Amino acid sequence: MTNSLTRLHNTRVLALLRAPSSACALRAADALVVGGVTGLEITFSMPNAPAVIRELSARYGDDIYLGAGTVTTRDEAMRAAEAGAHFLVSPGTRRALTAAMKSTGLLVMTGALTPSELMAAVEYGTDVVKIFPASLGGPAFLKSLRGPFPDVPLMPTGGITPDNLGAWFDAGAIAVGAGSDLVSAADLATENYDNIERLAARFISAGARLHTAGAGA
Image 1: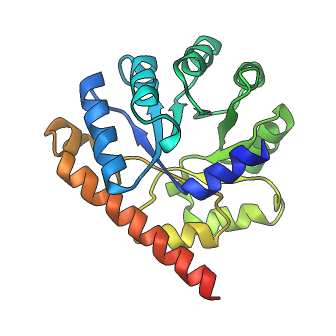
Image 2: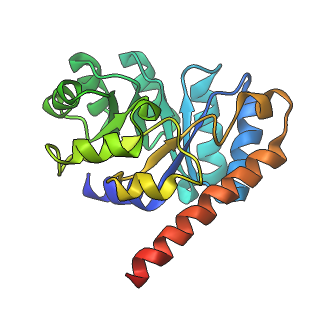
């Protein structure tokens, strides 16, 4: 699992895709990859998520870090794994669901916000705790969680932008999940894939600046 955590850390940004159709999701995914974002989380809150995962897996293979999001049932976890997902993400944490997700052998991320929820996620065996909705507390809240939980991999999701990316990593994020600030419902509805590509490039540029600053420290 160490290798999976390393890959998540190196990917840095996971784009959450909730598209109105499979065709729209695939075109948005292509735009993200062209823009440089190779971490793709295909959510089960959109139609035919396993089919989209299967097609993206065939199209890009290991050139992307591909997963399933909004996993809320054992069946969804199994279908995502069979389709070729590399990781599974649930918005919350439940013991039985976490066990089912872990049985796939994939990297498992489950959601929490409060310290008690985070402790439950760790107890149930999640690999990474998804702090959601992270926008409620911001980077300062994530940093405060680092005190009692210094060794738990945390991935904030919600409210992540190119402008505040550095603050999230400074606060201790292993990676971030970017939703509507990267792939908005408006851009999907109007098929504005050029803007999705542009925003992806902005996220990657911001991440590259952080890497360069860290290397020079």
